[in-house]
Length: 328
Image (cartoon, rainbow, N blue to C red; front, side, top):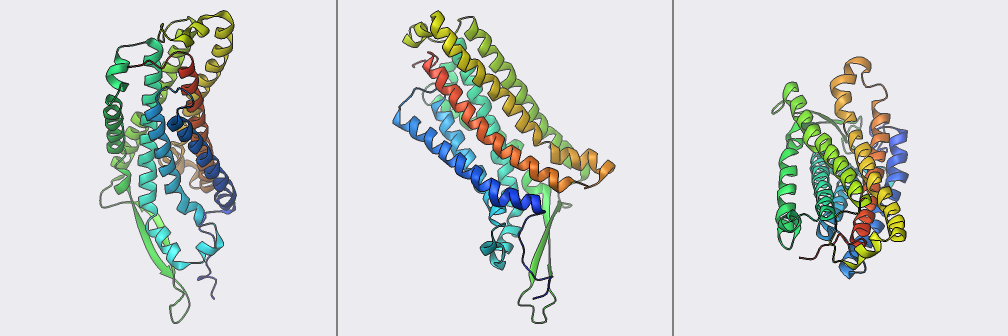
């Protein structure tokens, strides 16, 4: 078979192959184990959690995100990348998976922010907690947040188009090999519109949520250190108010909540790299090092998503243990 028709791994470089073939499978297994443990503990009612419903929805959304990322990893396995049917499916569906993963990431951010808001309101013992997160109202709140995130990120479905071509030197054409390339969709997009949509997305889905999450986690820590918030009739608050209990429990919360805020900020700001490179750095250095940078960034984003979910779960558990699970 001609070298033009040889079917190799569907990765952009050797580093990307290593990330997709070895690192991503470990990450997805680790996340599925973590998600299963969280969902199992929530449904079994073994421990009291703040934001139990939102945590479960967040777990499902993250599972769907990993599902959208799987075809890219599957393209690094020989029994799949040598199959032309799989190659064509992968290349033809690339835009859809890319768009859905971006939309689901926006939903993930929205739910994450809602959980932090719920933690803050419960710590403050605010009457808004019942209005927004009590009973069935939590589903309405989640629905509004999810719908808003989907609408804000819907432009990903028409931002890009796929350029398809075939190349093969075989005379009978039986081994024709499909090639594809993502490019800005000229039918719906101008460069100016592309820039404005992505800047708006970065503002409303990255910067503003990051500021809100960082601010509210700081406020919660201050309230707990001052002995404020929570349900004063809850037995856990008696433990939390004692000097020994305060020292032990405060140590955990003052570790988890700042870790949540900083991990969220670092991992989500990384998602700006591809857009910033395309708009600003491309004119300076072109695509030199672009594929390597994106491979590393994607792996760090996935690791950060797992860490965010785990840290948020631990924070919700500690908040529930410390009398912040107000009953309605």
